[in-house]
Image (cartoon, rainbow, N blue to C red):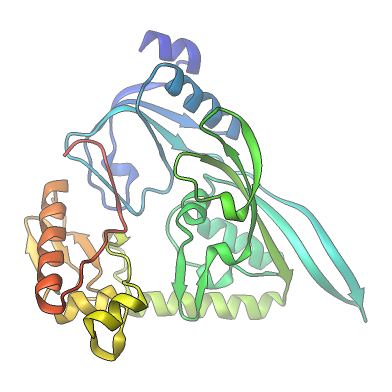
Length: 313
């Protein structure tokens, strides 16, 4: 602890409960907890952890993760970086109308919803359909988050990213290299197009309304638990209409409203597990296993988890 404080400063804390920092509101204590407010803070904290051979985890918006009840043995770096800047543009003005690309850079810790609202207000098209997506810019870019109505990926407009490599080098890489498992995303540049702000807000509000009607709201959940299956898997298993939707398979395997302890399959969307108030990580794990077993038995499909497990269970 003394060595970490010397290298990172007195704001480093010990034995911080992680549950309040996750959308599941589940999880035990981190041995060490550091809040990074700049990209330099993140890079420094990661390099210190690597130098000391200390396990570390970077915590963004807290969605898509399940933290173990026993917590995390090592250092959690909470990503509170917050800068959003317009880096530049290319294009032309024809008949008084701007055309071409605008490049927006956001720190990896920026809440994704904040970035979406910023781009809409600037009249920039490309992210408006993702309004309502939980989590941070770094998490959305790393996982290439998807929206279903209409289908679109965050990666569709990702241009490049600034990363910290495993060799502790800071590099600018194209979007194709953003998903390296061991590289740390510091900031992301998106390539967006000029658009009409009023039209963009209409699209964004339609997305919010669709989320309200199809996903649990104001509940403690990590988001979709399982990945959708591939088209090839759907054909081999002969799912109804060759559906690839894990939510459909879970629902029609009779899993909706299943309960284990304080964890429950959402009655709104079967691919969401809800913490009803006192769920433990073990409750969630047991429910995940039960869901997977039922879907395997009913459809012959092996579901792959989308949420990431962190720490000791």
